[in-house]
Amino acid sequence: MEEGRKRRKCPRIPVYLDVRVDQQDGIVVKGKVINLSTEGICIKTDDPVFANEEITVEFLLPDTLTSVRLGGQVVWYRYDTKTVEKKEQVHFSGVQFLDIVESYRSLIRYFTLKMLHDVELVREQGIERVLSDVLNLPPKERKTALNILTHKGFITEEQREELEHPD
Image 1 (cartoon, rainbow, N blue to C red):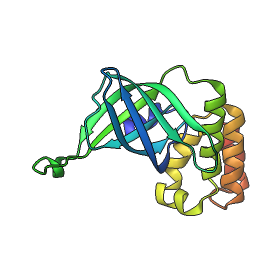
Image 2 (cartoon, rainbow, N blue to C red; image 1 turned 90 degrees about the vertical axis):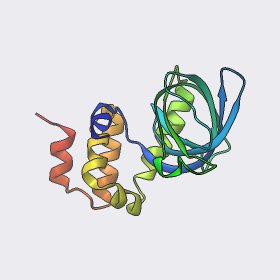
Image 3 (cartoon, rainbow, N blue to C red; image 1 turned 60 degrees about the vertical axis):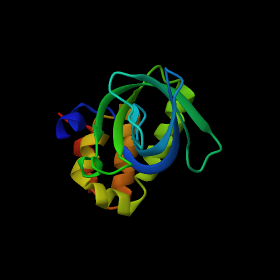
Image 4 (cartoon, one colour; image 1 turned 30 degrees about the vertical axis):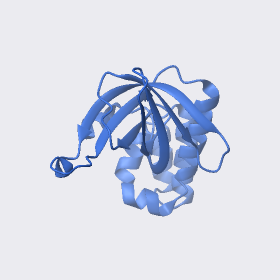
């Protein structure tokens, strides 16, 4: 999991949003988005959505009236081993967005940066993990995220300067 975190280009924010998954064979799967970034999502479903499958996901961003509908590639799949013997299993899939339009990317970026104001969320994630994601952001968004973290007292002005301009 840490290996995936090092490759990330942007922060993943924990969420719990309804999602509709349209598979190529016409099957529709309902589930929850459990984390979100401008590059992709992690979904939790009752039915499997397997790796390497191209799908379309649709979810509503909180605090907006925008329904986001994006194509994606399932890059990993796991199931909850505790549910194997049960009638209803729980499945998890990591979805990388394909050809995301800039308007959706901007909406998701705004939402994820806004979530950095949530002190409990940052504490829950751990500042080291949040910073490792923030440092992969493009310069403008990195600066905004570091300013938020400084304002909220998670890092000092000196740390922000150092992180903003690494030598």
